[in-house]
Amino acid sequence: MYLDTRELYKRQCELAEELDSLKYDVECAQEALEDNEDPDEQEDLVDKLDNAVSDLDIWQAEYQEELDELNALEDEVGREWMHGETLIDEDEFTDYAEDLAADLHGDAVTDAAWPFSHIDWEAAADELKQDYSEVEYQGTTYLFRAN
Image 1 (cartoon, rainbow, N blue to C red):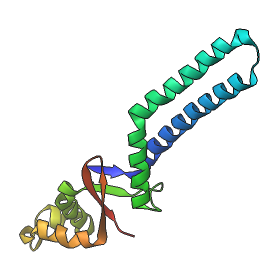
Image 2: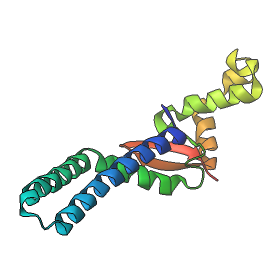
Image 3: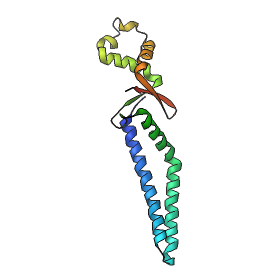
Image 4: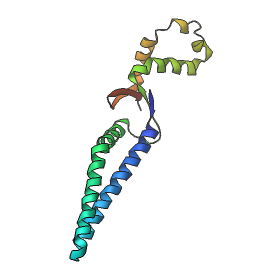
């Protein structure tokens, strides 16, 4: 499986916006409660604050780990994160190496013409890995082009 960091960046932004919005709701509810002196409105404001805190807690239970993992992945991938870096599942790297060779050398590879019909693609992939870095994401090791 290949992952495009632009898609991961988009998801990261969505999650960060949701989190910021929920935190803002809590802050607004707290401020409204602190600024209000009308005893008739206090109960409603306490309920609004409780609901905002509850919504934030639910969101964090469901999505905080995903956001943290995306933030850590961004740190590992570096400057190309938002512009697009391809993450290649380590288990599919041999196929990736063969596809890359086909992109570079065309039909000779895809038609398995000599000498490409005799290449040890696992050894070729191992050699290619020298130009790639590894990252862990959701329990899978991915390789990406080292800068």
